[in-house]
Length: 167
Ligand SMILES: [Zn+2]
Ligand SMILES: [Zn+2]
Image (cartoon, rainbow, N blue to C red; front, side, top):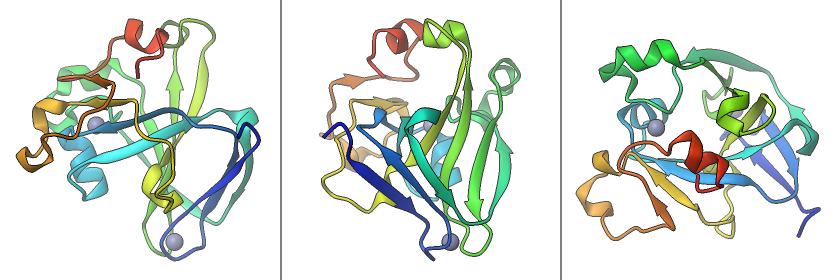
């Protein structure tokens, strides 16, 4: 439903973000940075834009990290070329609920924007829309083989993939 409201919440409940409408770019990533950042073997997130964000609550601290677009610890050359991402985590429980990603006009194939990515797990909703794509499949744990989405990327989607809506 176009106007559906969904709320993502940290595990202690202090931090939440409520968004309107269907998510953009629901995707997974198996890069080692995402694995370490989440403590999980695989991160799944979605994007919303400013006009779709209804409400944000709770005190966060920000970790200015490398994009989840690189295997950051292994790829320092790529780090320098990419903008940093502000990861917002709950000051009480530490859950990273959402993060702000500056996207250049080139990456968006239009205007530069700041996307708000939200951890799909924080919605705790098994009916949340299924990911369209999966990134860094090269790092996927072997026991996750068989998990297939419409667009599977060995590493990253290109700006052209993004502009074509494949991410
Ligand atoms: Zn919390
Ligand atoms: Zn990643």
